[in-house]
Length: 326
Image (cartoon, rainbow, N blue to C red):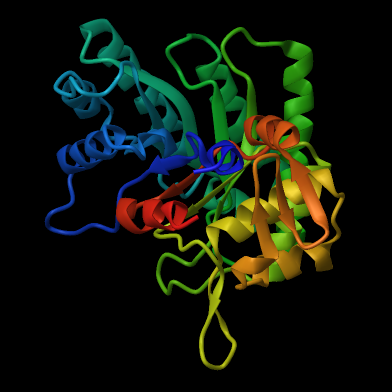
C-alpha cells in the first residue's frame, strides 16, 4: 500500500446502516465495525453512523467494545421531516438523548457529526426563510455544549437532478457559514453538504452532470462535501448499452480533489467521473494523477481534511475490497 493511497482513504469510511433486514440491528453494526477496526484495514474506517433514535443504545453498546479505542466516533443521522416543527422535534430529542448518555456515563462515544435532511416543505416551496430557520435551530442547539456535534451536513430530501435547487441550497449553506464565522460559537465549526449518489428506491445513479455541478459549486463556495451510497465499487461501471450503473469511489475522490488542484471545469470532471479504465489513474508515492491532471500528496492531505472528509456506505466488505484492490 503506497503513501498516496493511505492519504486518499485514511479514516474516510463512515459505516452506516444497511437497508432494513431481519438480521440488521445496532448490535450487529457495532460488532462489524469492531471487527474491521481490528484488522489491517482498520485505518480506513472513520465514524459509525447511528440513527437519531439509537443514541442511548449506542452508549450502552460502546461500553462493551473493549477492542475499539475510545471514544468511538459517531455520526447521528436524522430522517426526513415534513416541516420545521417535526424537524425541531428531531433535533430536540437528539439533544436530550446526548445529555442523558453523557450524564449517565453510558459508554464512551464522541459525537462528531449530524447528518440531516432539510424539511420537505421548505424544499418544495424553495423557501429561503424556512431553510435558514432549520439551520439556525441546529446551530442554536448544537453550539451550547461541547458534547454535541460540531458539524452538520445538510441533505436535500428529494432525489432528483434539479441543479437550480442545488445551487440555491448550497448558497444558503455558504452564506450561513459566513455568518457563523462572525459569531464564532464556542462548540460549532461549520455546515457542509451531503449527497446520496444513487436513488435508495431504484438504485439509479445521479446524472454525471448533476454530480459535476455538486463538485463545482461546493468547491467555489468553500463547502465540505460528503458522499453516501448503499455500496461503492472502485471504478465507474456501465451496462451493455453504455448506461451508467454505478459511479466509482476512486472517480468521485479523484474528480473532487483534482477539481481543486487543477481548477477543472464541468466537462473535465464528467470525464473523470465516467472513466472506467484504471490505467488512466496513477497513484504513486507523491501524487494522484488522472491523465495530465495531478494533485500532490501535500495538497491531497490538506484537501481531504477541509473539503472531502469522508464518505459513507453500508457494505463493509465490498467497499473495503475496492480500496484494497488498489
